[in-house]
Image 1 (tube, one colour):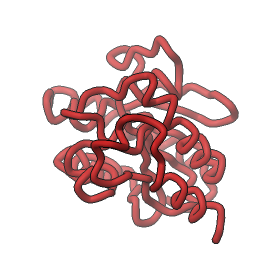
Image 2 (cartoon, rainbow, N blue to C red; image 1 turned 60 degrees about the horizontal axis):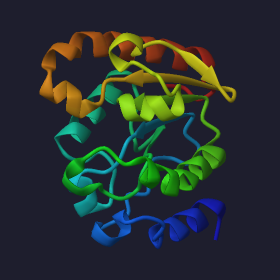
Image 3 (cartoon, rainbow, N blue to C red; image 1 turned 45 degrees about the horizontal axis):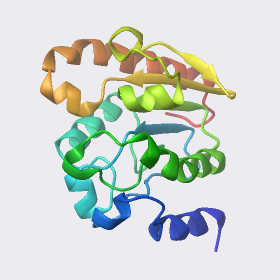
Image 4 (cartoon, rainbow, N blue to C red; image 1 turned 120 degrees about the horizontal axis):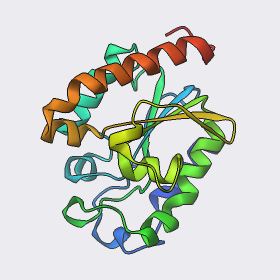
Length: 189
C-alpha cells in the first residue's frame, strides 16, 4: 500500500469528532496525486456526503466550469479536497474543534502532493490556509506565499451561485491564476 492509499484508508475510518456520527461518507478528496495545483474548500455538503466526492452539486459543477476556463480538471491536473472530510449538519461552517480534529488529513495530503499553488475556495479556507484575518471581499485574487507555496483565494462557488454579480471578478481572478500556473508549474496546462 502506498502512502496515499494508507492515508485514505486511515481517513475513511476517522472518528476524531462528532461529524463522524452523522456522515454518510468521508469525502477524502480527488484528483491526480502529482497535481501541482490544490483546491481547498471548507467541507462537504449534502451531495458530497451522499457520493463521497468533493464538489459535486451545483457548486461543484460551477467549480468544474471555472477550472475548465483555465485548463484545469480534477481528472488530469488539479487535486480537490476540503478542510473537514465529513459534512457539518445543515451545511453550517465547520467548527474550530472539527477543523482541528480533521487538520491532520489535509496537512498530510498537502505534504504528499507538494503543490506549487493552493487555491482556497472561500473565506473559511483562506482564513486557515492564507491568513487568520483574511478578508475575501477585499483580498480575493491576490497572491500570498506561505511555507514555500503560492496561495490565492476565490469566492466559494456556492457564494457565486447566491450572488452572480461576483462572476466577472471571479473570471478575472481565474485569469490571474492561469498566468501564475504557466509561470511556476512544470506540467503543460
